[in-house]
Amino acid sequence: EAEVAQSPRYKITEKSQAVAFWCDPISGHATLYWYRQILGQGPELLVQFQDESVVDDSQLPKDRFSAERLKGVDSTLKIQPAELGDSAMYLCASEQSAAYNEQFFGPGTRLTVL
Amino acid sequence: DAKTTQPPSMDCAEGRAANLPCNHSTISGNEYVYWYRQIHSQGPQYIIHGLKNNETNEMASLIITEDRKSSTLILPHATLRDTAVYYCIVRLKAAGNKLTFGGGTRVLVKP
Image 1 (cartoon, each protein chain N blue to C red):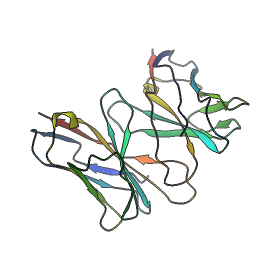
Image 2: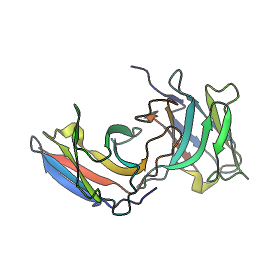
Image 3: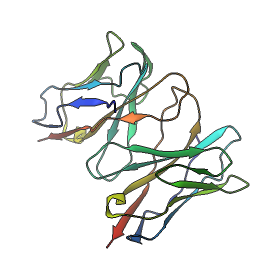
C-alpha cells in the first residue's frame, strides 16, 4: 500500500539553527498539507499546496518558516532560525484531487529544539 | 468548519464495544462527519466518514443522529491496538479542505 514518506523521523537542534523536513506524498496526490502538532494537542495546518502552488499559508509563521513544492511532487518545510517553541511533531499529509475520501498522513518528524 | 465536542478520555475493556460520542450542533447541511485516530507517535489515520446515514466499514461503524447534531463512533470489538486518540471532525467533502482537529478523545483499551 502506498504511503506518505517523511524524513528525518527525529531531529534535535539548538535554537537559532536551521532545520528542514522532507515529505514525499503518495504518487498522484495533487494536494499536500503540512501540519504541526504540539504535544497533547491536535494537529494544526501550517501550509497547503495544490500541485506546486500554495493555497493556504495563513497559519505559517513566515518570518521563520518556509515551504516549497517545486515540481508539485515532494515538499520541504524549513525553519530558520528555530526557537524553543517550535518543538513539536511535523506531519505531512496528501490527498487525491478527485473522489476525495481521506487524507493520508506520514509518520511525522519529531523536532526538539534545545 | 463546525466545531466538535468530545470527551477528553475514556476507558474500554478489551473485546467489548467502544462507543465514542461527538457533538457537532452547528454542523451545516453539506458538511460531513469524519473520524480519524492517532496511535502514539504515528500520524493520524482515517477511520470513516458519513453525511446522514449510518456507515460501516472494516474498522468501525458511524451512527449519526437524525438531526445530525451528534454522532457516535463504534469500535465493535476493541483490542489493545485500538488504544489511541480519536478525532471527530466536521468538514465539507471536497478535495483541498483542511482538517481542523480538536482535542479528541484519548481511548485506553484495558485487558
